[in-house]
Image (cartoon, rainbow, N blue to C red; front, side, top):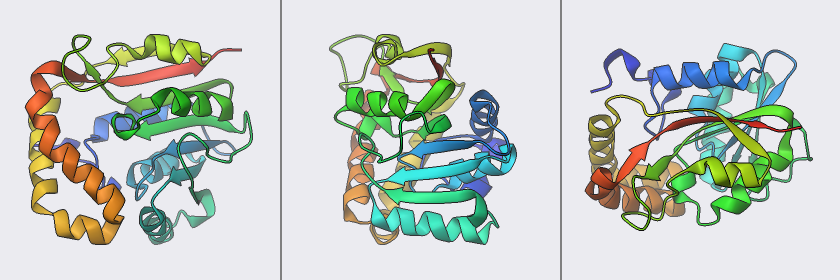
Amino acid sequence: MYGYDYPEDASPFSFVTRKELERIAGALRVTTGMRFADIACGQAGPSLCVARATGAFVIGIDSSEVAIGAAKTAAGARGLAHRAAFLIADAAATGLRSASTDGVMSIDALQLMKHRDAVLAEISRILKPGGRFAFTPWVSRQADKGPAFPVDYGPLLHSVGLSVESCDEPSNWEPRETAVFAAIRDSAARLRMELGETVASMLASEADSMPQVYPLIRRLNIVARKRG
């Protein structure tokens, strides 16, 4: 279903494509000597790809101790341990200093977070003025129908000091996601071992519920810039 666009080197537990990762790497505008954060990094496959492509240092944040352990192993195996650090922390309270990152990314994670406003405020806090936040969310096609997703991230981002620079819907996202969710359902036991019970349960619940609401949602690639 993904073909060439499947980012095999990213080993993602997500729906991100090679094209999306290339776009994120360019959109963040980070390079050697800069650093970016990956919120809800999981095993960090996507952000390690971005770190390799840009030369920047990545700080992965995730609440799962199991996932962070796997991320550290992956960084070492890919020769990127010197350009990566990983922290066990809540997405809304990373512990990073204010204005300490040149960019922030987040892959397919905001839909799992109950307090998106607090998470977005934290992302704005840790970003330097002018820094970019690149992320891949789903939105509702119409208010009050389907999952409790925003219809438009623009107002939420604006309220925390971020302005949308680009917003696009990838082609063929729905059939790709259907195939991934089927694989998640078939791999429930392995995911519990690799990610821990809490994260694996969230993914399993998502795999059961999301395909039923596809007519009511859209997947987007959004890039926002911190004002100032």
